[in-house]
Length: 258
Image (cartoon, rainbow, N blue to C red; front, side, top):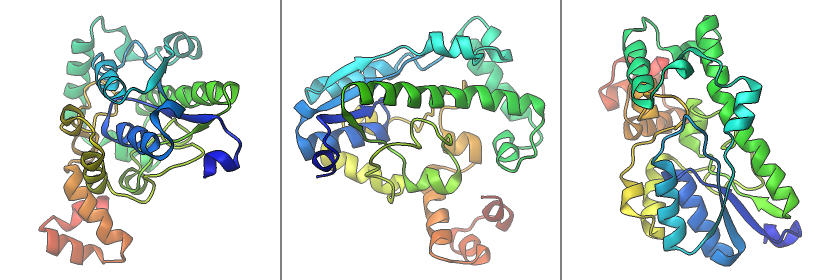
């Protein structure tokens, strides 16, 4: 209905090959038909090389057309790759160095950034990795407006409440956000119902913008997604920190930190 009301010719979904964007893609295909849906792949040279294969797995299975735009040249021009990890020669070495650094950091770098307490090194790194998602958003709308398409995004409540998204990035802006009021645990159920391939359902929640971070919930906040879902569900419904900590058998300091 929104597509018709806004006089668009179809839908464009930025597709990473992960759970959220795959679920949105199939929701759109079911709503308006796969022939009116286009998946947009936006790879870059530091990205996960497996992302393309996961994306193609779902688009081929459900016969959804794709557009691919490599954003590496844009990122290079704006300075995204002008950072310490970029100068390491292989992806494996980048991931090793990143994991080593995160494990040795006294304070959680992500939380320090969210609190505005990070030093110049962390701020520079985060700014450059966040720029990848913002460039993806620009390219998405460039193509959508050229082709008169409606952009449908994959933001959801778990990421919103935890801050695990890039503000004004490709997952934060769209014309429609069908998963906006769902937690990740619920999205897994929706995805299974829609027929998202098992290979994608089983993937860890990898943000694919920070080397070495394979599970953004566990690696950046220290708890698995299902535990965090319950924690923020309690916060969302007004439970006190002490009640959440007691019911979930978590340290009160961890609940307050989240």
